[in-house]
Length: 287
Image (cartoon, rainbow, N blue to C red; front, side):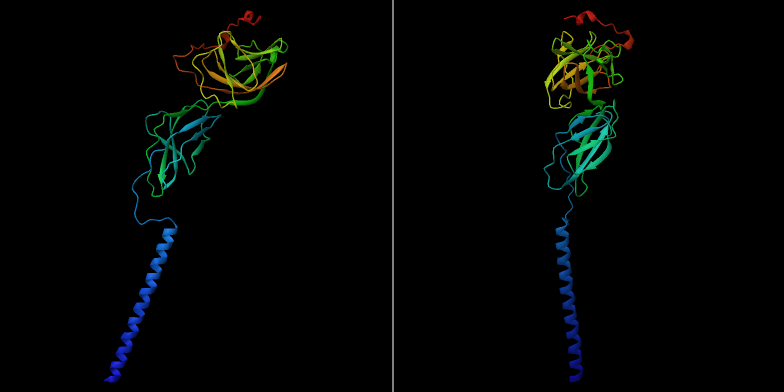
């Protein structure tokens, strides 16, 4: 009897020790798992609250591209941003791409097409904000750099520039949108009587002037050319262009340019349908 009791006591004692050891191992494993999950930023409570809609959305118009910028969200759990586009402000927007930054480049934009953009923020739980409320659109347009034209008095055949086909033309060519003049040491940019031009002042680059003005055009159809200034031209067929003069010598100017392919709104300058119908008033050039 004493022998049997001793055996049972040893058996039960061994089982209790194994059970305690298993509990200890399980406890250590659970603590380890909790530590790992906490280190990875995983929270056992699910967040159903989406971030606020991004603010301060802006665009920079380019040549077959649009750069989109916005302010960073203040929420600590924002994981990134989705950028959307549409062809009208109202309606369903299509996802363009995602980024963790506050800058996105739409390098698939096509010159002459108007795009509306919206940005939404999303968090680590997949909650997405509403689209940004800013009315933001862009119409990409062609641009060029380091183009030269010459004084029309001495080099008439290479003194004008045409935005219609982006090339140097004679100053009195039907496709000439502006031309360069050196009159007794004073440099001018001239347009014909069916067009307009305005000096927008000194700028850092061609991108500083985002929109064409609605008033303030030169009544004499010319402006004094100054290096570092940007000029807006309102062409006779209701397009806007801008040039920034980079360098001036006695016989030429070098400039950067950008030209908007989309005509202005109908309440703006009436357009002629055919460039061959232009009539130039050359008497105006006599100073």
